[in-house]
Length: 434
Ligand code: SF4
Image 1 (cartoon, rainbow, N blue to C red):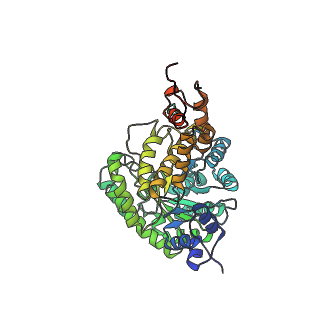
Image 2: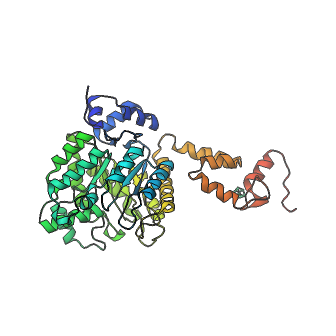
């Protein structure tokens, strides 16, 4: 029996290789996985032309996934530097890479990433449209927008961010409701500009069925973008954000009717007390579709540390239903991240994702912590390094400050509680004063 998309296969009861891989990785019975894929609460973004992919699932009951953004810009356009970031991100266990290249002819980098990268690959075709046609945004035609999306799909992109929910009605809400930071989504602001300059409806909203045809042809997963994501904690949960989310819920149903897989993108910047309610609202309005959040950054005052403001919000979001976290680096709001920024961002986001997985009771999540605690109780340093989220950093800290006794560290020395408890239980004497 043939199928079009992974969702279509799940609905027909066809077990694909991608489903088998995801079920095995997640310790989930394949029947449960397929049932949730058929409903839409799990997406398995696997483009038919991404031949080296090691598939992952995103959604209900699965481990929280982590995405790394990278790509060339006008000021930083060295492909080799960005490819080094791709390899580092995969080595650090990021499950997705988003190529957000926004300068010049981006196809060379995109196709290199897709040909080498086993992680899911996502893009925002809107960014590419400007460079691809070398035209002013106003002059890009509706046909040209769709051709860029099709080009990305044909190249093997697994999921594409499309801001189809930022329609004229939402644009009116933006105008009528003051925000401190306006529209901060890059793709959302480009579409908003195009709509205003041409006095026209969002082409991806108006011709949504055309988008769905492309998605079906290549099994491109739609990541419905939040053009109105708040760019400051002042602007969160406002009329524009909620209006767009309602539209995204409607577009989700239309995509599912065509067996197109969907993820919903979310905020942004948001105070901690609003996060849980926002997660519930998204799941309700978008019928349980997987939720992919950037942050949320829980305060606006820590440039240079936004991997931390974001990890705090990401952990709360994921523990309350978000399925996929987009990393944020210390360079956020300041510059294009370098390799070190990227590593800091990946680790911070993986910590958030794992902490949430413990709270979500994902099978196997807590046993990792228990193994680390056992190694600590045994003062087994090699075991601790091997279990560490960042083994290189853990080892370098230990080696930078050597204790007098191997079975302690320079924090407490002879007063090491773990060492002394072990020794007492082994019937040994404790000498603290010599
Ligand atoms: S010396 Fe103190 S900090 Fe170091 S391992 Fe022992 S109890 Fe822990």
